[in-house]
Image (cartoon, rainbow, N blue to C red):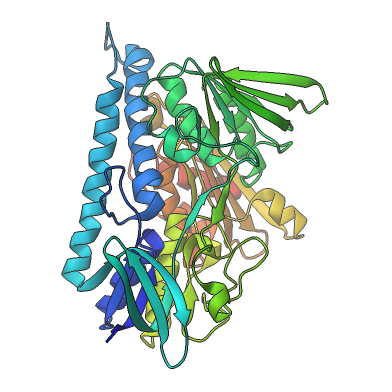
Length: 476
């Protein structure tokens, strides 16, 4: 007889494992299906994010930043360092240790919360009063039943048509996190979040990095002022060669490396020659092999599962969360959707405020924002006021020798309610949390301006930007 559960979650990335844990906390018998395996063949939880995405990339970003800091940024502090070197294998080992600790931590959370981990590939078989699924694992297949199903199968890297990715010479995010040596010449196709972060890692460790971006503008999703500042910093001090508006043609791999034929924005033929190539042109949802066609689950032309505002799919008692549904492919967005769905299944009133989802880029300096950009407000005809304050006038930023960038606050011209906050600077990923809270609770720029911020701290820049909305900054 098939095992039966109140809730079965397919996928154990951030959206999936959080949904499973929350469902179990609410008293629902819960199972989570996950097929991910480590290079040595062991099943692992955490999905792309923890295994080959967010967590390992941040570990390498931190290691490479420390190396660059020792080489170039300690002298101003009166610290002299000579003979600085790095051990790439030690960096990679540290990254892998962090990944293992995190994924094993999820397994411990499953055990503590009584979530059943079903190891293998899950797919729908049929419906009825319950949903019938099959889990194909190492030891064969198992039939299970679920009253409710949450699909959280995540996404994978989009590849260029006709360009095979071997994750050794031509790589996506997975291979780019495991180079066995630092390439002298590194090519990156795509100058988005992942491309910039991975390009920054290897540039700091010695690669000459050239990036090709198809879009005519840089960081189009960010506020224009932030994008302009980022372009100046990344291409000048960051040492990244970025070419916009290109059209990529043939990609050829040979003994000498990789050759990428492309046309510049002006239509001139050019060639990028590199030792290794990272293809970072976005991600696509993992909905193949799910059995959606078997039960009639609606999937759109781009492979996303169609859902309503509460992540309900087209069939009763089926939900989908995270990268397989509309909206930004952000781990924390998926986590919040997972919690919302679990609470709705349990009869509560789960909710996600999509206007208060932060975006973060872990470059140096970091970039983070929440809410509307200035160009969005203009396009929507919303009257607003803007306040901006630089880190260059902040004592803590100067003390850290990280004074580049600024924080910008956009507020409704009439009500003063905060509509968007945009930051580029040191620890922007942490500072943006205050802005998320402000937007979630409908705060005004005056509210932020009136809150006492510790001195000296980077958070004071947030307060000064709020004061600047009313043209009354106190320190600039």
